[in-house]
Length: 141
Image 1 (tube, rainbow, N blue to C red):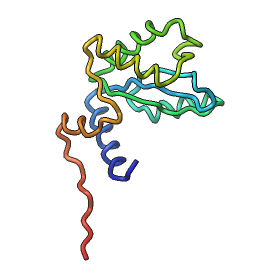
Image 2: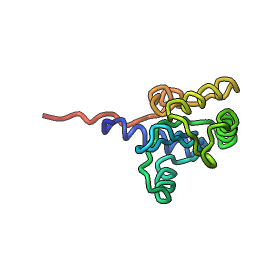
Image 3: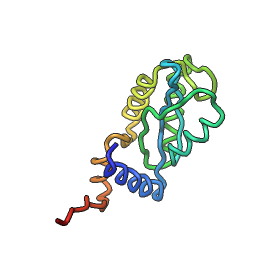
């Protein structure tokens, strides 16, 4: 990720958290391609850090989406849990590829008419919120 995109991302996340937005996220495990966790959080990086402390295997954020509030995030999370109930390992952990779980999240949101903004769609989110972001510095010669 470029430095400019990192600045945009941090500013956007602060902006969204400050307005009550929450994330639905999918975590993966580097030692197993068929393990995924779904959850919700206001701060995905912090949540990953909390979960990693109690897990001996290396975890990573596969994908996350912003929802307008905690209630909508929970709604999508519970819907995905119901859809994947036959794949539960324990709690929020599933014996499925993170790619598949991410697809289920998007399908559940679409089916329930819940708008989610993807983590990789920063430009559309920035435009939607009309954020004033720092411009690249110009070098003076």
